[in-house]
Picture 1 (tube, rainbow, N blue to C red):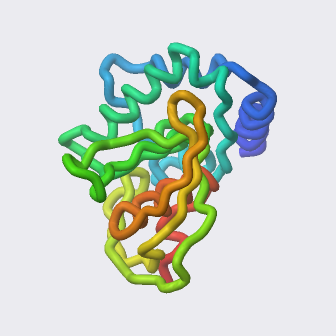
Picture 2: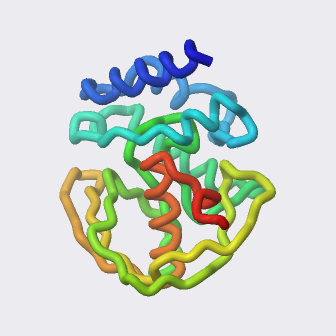
Picture 3: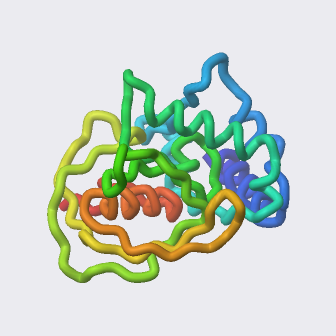
Length: 192
C-alpha cells in the first residue's frame, strides 16, 4: 500500500514539472488493442486511489504533442462505447491525471461532444436541484445529486485560447460532475 501511494505521489510530482507527457502517461495513451481505453473503477483499489488524486493542468506544449490528439480520440471512443456509453469523461477516468474533460453538449444543436482544457467553474447558481447521476467509474450506482443548474465555466480550447461561457441545465450538471473528477471527487461523495 505504501509503495502504491509513493508511486502515485511520484507520478503526480513528475507531471507537475513536465511540459511533456510522462512515459507512464504515454504508455496508457497508447496501450491496448482498440480505440477504447480501460476506465478506472472504484471497485479496484489502485484505480480508486488514482480517481481520488487531483489532476495537473495541461500547457500549450502538451497540446501540440501527438499524445494529446491520441488521448482525445481514445477518450471520445471510450465515452461513446455502445457497451458502456456516457455523456462525459475526464482524463483521470482513463488513468491520465491531467485537467481535460469531454462533455456532450446537450445545449447545442446536434448534441456534440467537445473537449475542455483546464476547465474551472468560476461561478454557479446557489439554487441546487436534485437529479439522477451515474458514472463510468462507479459501476451499478445511480442516485440523485443536488447540483447548480447554471454555471460560468472558464477553459482553454485546443489552440490554448481562454474562454468563459455560461452553461445551463443538464449540460451544466455534466460539467460539474466531470470537473469534480479533476479534483479527485466522485458523485457518490454527495450522497447522504
